[in-house]
Length: 508
Ligand code: MLC
Ligand code: AMP
Image (tube, rainbow, N blue to C red; front, side):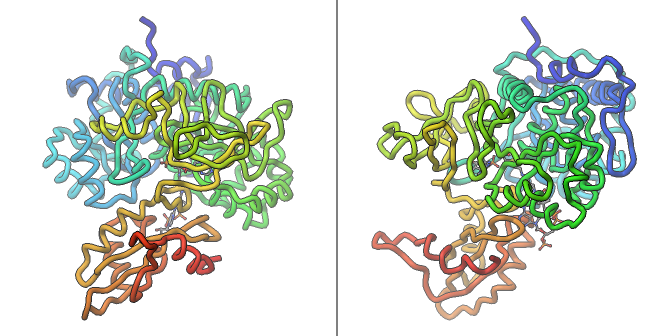
């Protein structure tokens, strides 16, 4: 049997000269390809020494670093399943993910060891390691005792590589199970479709706990043996400073608007760039046009999900068509995209309906949730994305909205139902509604509208402060209003569209 381990495929693409620089960081460090090869081998050997059971999950909540990236690659190499967690998650969120995924190993920041290890041990995890931003922590200390040679574990295309938690279309967070085959097939398609070539250099400025930074950007560069300019945190000034040394950049729309606000962004600094990719949230036409004017480059917008990796992309090559602002382009080779009405009938070109997808990139299902998985697939095997859109005569896909109640803020997903749950549990709160409104920087942000119980006095600032003490910071509504009643339709359902309309000018 061929080894379909994703790591083996990435490793095979490393350049012949392993002494060449693979990663240069914004803190002045340089890692060769040999460093990546040896570092991932040592961590993989450490994982192997733990004698974990087949399919063991390695849950990781650490700050972005090259070692954190190596931990991801080592997890693949060792045949384990990677479970990345947003660094903003707090106790209740980590408790849920760790309790649900039952990881064999948890890796956290040294500063969080106290509370994270407690949660992990309670959930039955046997091994908790730390990994800091400064190449510190017990993970690397332990890995250093292991050999720097390691043969990637045999894996089939259908074996699990990663679990990414997402709320999907409704309800509690679900773990999307992605296989080696899902990730590798998508990376291979993008390598060709986006014209990755010799000499490409990627600017990596996204977090590495979501699809965009962890898979699309990272696999792109590694599968092409391309050097990465690594930014621990996105800083528009610093990225612009290094642009002359790079050819490819990937970002969520907020990264583009923040760079546009910098006077140093111009055609000269962008002259060596080949490709700017945007995704994870809608890119405003205004940003698309402003970028073209300032840099001379046309942003390529693409569309994807945690459950599916990349689905559609505007064309890279002009012979395939122009990059159209406001659209997410064509289905990628091998990916099926269709638009259907409520009755499950295919809609003609230009008509708006539910977007359903199919392909080798589509996930295996939700972790330990067979019923939920079944609900999200049609009888003929297409995945319901929860996005609403249309496909025009020429095949361009446009996303016009979402049937799922979801706010996308700066590229992070925020589920109103989760925030409402926390608000409703607070003393004095009768009920609440959280809606997304336009925001110049984050694209969209949450606003909470709360009703007090009879006789209760609620202070919006206190409600916000209470949320902040419990939830990841990006989920906190940027404003909160206490009102007498919520608008409802004849069925008694809260009319969120009216609340959105009412508050749409708050941050415009
Ligand atoms: C930070 N803040 C946010 C926020 N990020 N608020 C709303 N939405 C966000 N996304 C708030 C914090 O709560 C904090 O507020 C303040 O901003 C400063 O925090 P920070 O951490 O210093 O922020 P900053 O570094 O400026 O982060 C902004 C950002 C970051 C845009 C760089 O959000 C980011 O990296 N976004 C990318 C997300 C991403 O990679 N998405 C891909 C998902 S994959 P306070 O009040 O606490 O001080 C996917 C599939 C696909 O969707 O198709 O790709
Ligand atoms: P996630 O669950 O974080 O993977 O988020 C996936 C969701 O992000 C998709 O279902 C879309 O709603 C949204 N998304 C991703 N890319 C785009 C895009 N280019 N334009 C609009 N929405 C997008």
